[in-house]
Length: 27
Image (tube, rainbow, N blue to C red; front, top):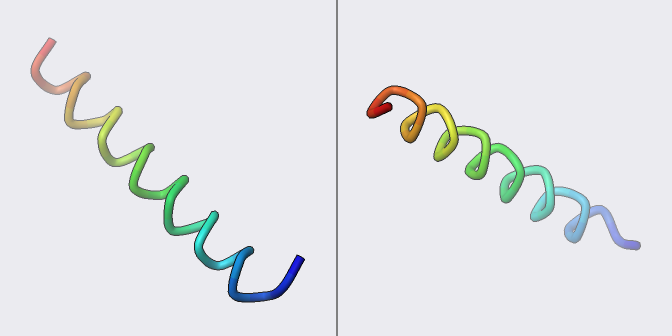
């Protein structure tokens, strides 16, 4: 796996966690 792919995955996971926090805030 290239560094770029690892960075993309990290960004994706960070975005997912951010989305989960937003959802929790609404609940």
